[in-house]
Length: 500
Image 1 (cartoon, rainbow, N blue to C red):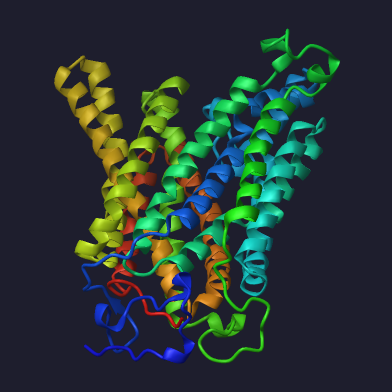
Image 2 (cartoon, rainbow, N blue to C red):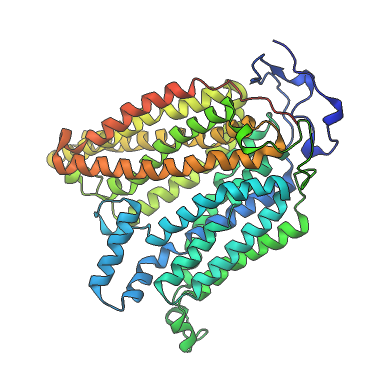
């Protein structure tokens, strides 16, 4: 076990750009992998991190702002023509590859598909630009885009105007990748897992806040006629909620401009040599970056597969293989799970990584996919037995199975932050963090699209053809997840080392 030599001439004295750990706190293998043997954890930079977390909160609020009134919006565009409503709904379903049952679960519309495509073609370029221009300018661009696009959504009076506003949202919005890059620069191996684990809390709270604002303030002329009377508010019934969510983003813009400190040094200098230079795209495709990207693709595939299936099996009738929950029950279940899981991930991931190692935590997260997919048909079996026999034991087993299902779902939630840590450590230096995040995010986005389409297609085919009583899709995904576990074991125990 040899210590990696440190080049003092390349070390900057700024706290955000110090060596990842001092030589006596690191143990490095000869192949450049990192093994965490230190018990001392570097404190998190609270102000910088708090600003980044607020930006994730704004993104969650802006992205969820349309959902409470989405179906009503489509009906307005259809002018009461139910055939057009059905057409829009079918386009929504096909765009998200969700089978046409139950209808109330068609939450993704054509604008979502197009905005995801817009984000897909721009994320690499925006991430690469942040390596040259700096993280702060890209955050300013992203938060400004979120504020403007959300406001434009509120004044949209045609279907394609909504599409344009949502495409703008993704085309110039690179908050997620830039925030991850900035976190990688202000943290080291001793506290990076803690920082990434916290990201789920502001996203959950932001999504809840955005949905709450939009649901409560939509149609103000009808809900609050004394305050918002007049044809203007009838013509633009969603301007008030979208304006409120846009205001949250505007606050984030002020905070970033006033208090956020640039985390990238020597920006704009592409002629540097040494470990702090910006590495060309082709040179970034090293074995460790490729391995990190492949494992992220596999993890995103299975996580998105379950996420796509979740609203289906929760809402489908028990006779069709689902749980037969109402929309209110589904919302309560997912809301409670999201809040509890976010808190657990934030407080437990860091200690678990320091005790057992990053690879072990990620492997357990992937292992949980195997029983998680199998617990869906098992829960449905107990539900069918309970309905048929009115057996108290079957009812208890059904609840225990459902609880076990979401325990597994919570376990694989640890993998999201673990993958972010691996991707960050795979970069050759901190100047190239933006490009590496962009490179890995493009195939991850494609994996999410494929995973959602594949999972819902297999489930639909299993139900239509009666394969294994409609359960064949879950068994197939569970078996495929075994390969994902083997892939994770190829990763180093605690990530790779980085040049400064």
